[in-house]
Image (cartoon, rainbow, N blue to C red; front, top):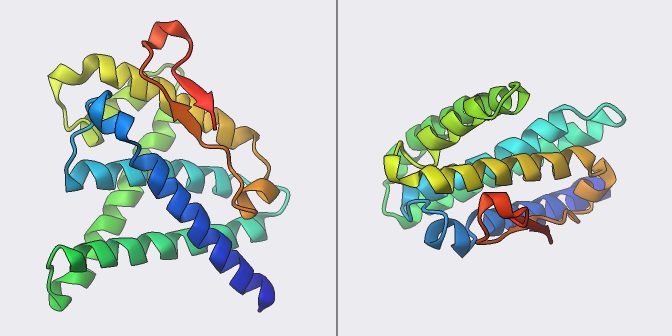
Length: 189
């Protein structure tokens, strides 16, 4: 019971850090992510999907990974519920919208998983272009940055220990405004 409460607190903190990462101003100001509800939702989904993928691949202590995953998904659902209510969505519509958002999460997560598993960047870029950039042809340079950022984020998540994730001590990469070819697109937080 004590472990569960501690995990719940750490999960909430970890989820809050994930949301803060997804809402970094640079994404919306320099990397051309549309600053609207849909794109902000998609940025949270992107970050959460990568964390979920990492937790699902845990082999040393899968039961602890599953517990953290379950807690993070509860945080996600509660966050979406709160946001919908703040936007004025009525009580009768909230659960239906939450169901749609959850289905959207799993669809996007599958697309990002396929993109990360593909031999080249194209499948990942396509998923990001469709979901994050809403197929904006003006966002090609930003899409290159985002694709590189996601790969960088994924490599960090693959290498971090579950203990560090459970402790809520993940060093999120800090995106920069450098061009992709400059090699300084992200710094470790």
